[in-house]
Length: 159
Image (tube, rainbow, N blue to C red; front, top):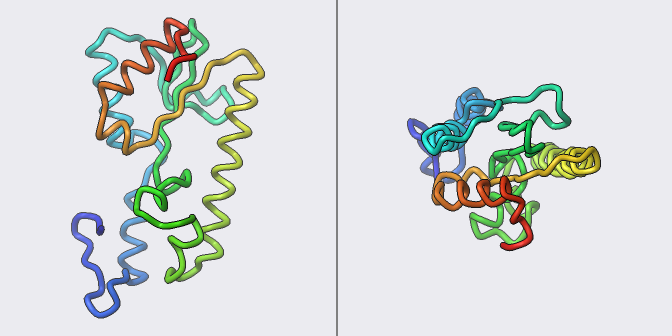
């Protein structure tokens, strides 16, 4: 699957270095489409929150300070689930044919470890934490909002 405006190399079905650079230039850490969709839906539903709480560990995308609830919207690729969604057997398998595979695997694993550390530290300091995958927000926004509403009511022990 390629990004809009990016054509795969027809011979090898791989992206060129220039194509990868163009894609990476468009990646942002905040105000992503899934994040903005969730923000709009939550505001429409009457929720009040703060965004990009830089004073908290991991800089949560959304924060409900009175409820001590931190929300993260994790990108599938950057936070380590895209390989599964694309049908690979492992993170490493996703990068078999990639240039700089050691770099990418190391980068994603560092992100995952950092996510666990940040979540643990927030919980240890009395915060509740919800993490949504970007694909889940895009595909089932209503379910994400319901999960968040349950967390606000502290009904988090159900799945």
